[in-house]
Image (cartoon, rainbow, N blue to C red; front, side):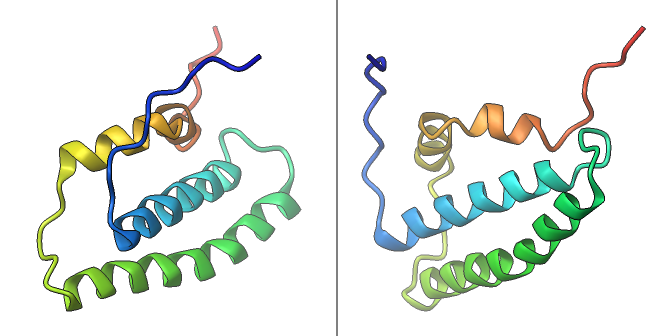
Length: 100
């Protein structure tokens, strides 16, 4: 049985799309990270997918801007990212701990 997760904060559809695409891009960057991978093909595939993910992320941000949503509510979006395991997912983008 999975533990109860905290509820996501209320987000607009565009904010939800930004969060989803951002985390997708983070996941792809984690797969591309040469310090964590051992397969060039896997990194290549992730890099190819990153291009289309970046386009969708750009479009979601452009839509928010066009609608007059000129400011991001960083606290709310950070809560959403934490709820969706963003801390663990983003850690894969950085360098792994040094092996002694």
